[in-house]
Length: 204
Image (cartoon, rainbow, N blue to C red):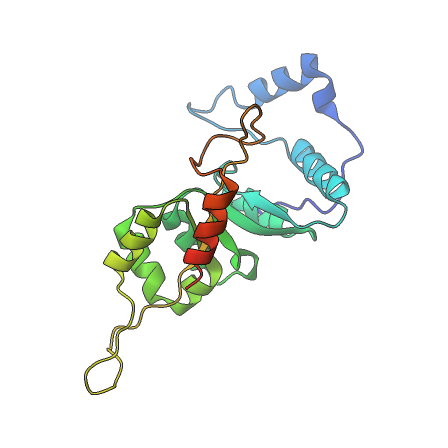
């Protein structure tokens, strides 16, 4: 079933929880657990509300929170949503490998140590152009180099036959200060001087 979220719903049945939730319970009563339910009207309403508040700023969809491919497809079909923040590198590869233009800009939400996935990313031109790794420590870049060494010149001046693609990366920085934190504490890196140094050191 292909979901269509183009029209913003006029009704909002979820605003009446005394009838909304019992109706969902009744609809899934004969289903074997575990089971998940998505209210299409609520999904469409939330998507259009986000677009309205974004005022033209592109919205990246977090697939790490939306675990249904059909929902990702439907949301990304709406003008204004662009790009995905994936849960793992393996998932990012799965999405990018479809060839679907909606999955041309994928940011992996967390640093990865998946050697198999890193090796595939570094050896595939299409995947490397579509996926960006999250890093917050030099050790993670060292791992990438260990799994997929950079192409080195041979003594004869020719290149090695194994070519590593350019691996895009994004520096994970915490927005936590001495007294206030504006984001989850996912990264231990927050000092401006450290962040500036890493941005310079990781540019090559």
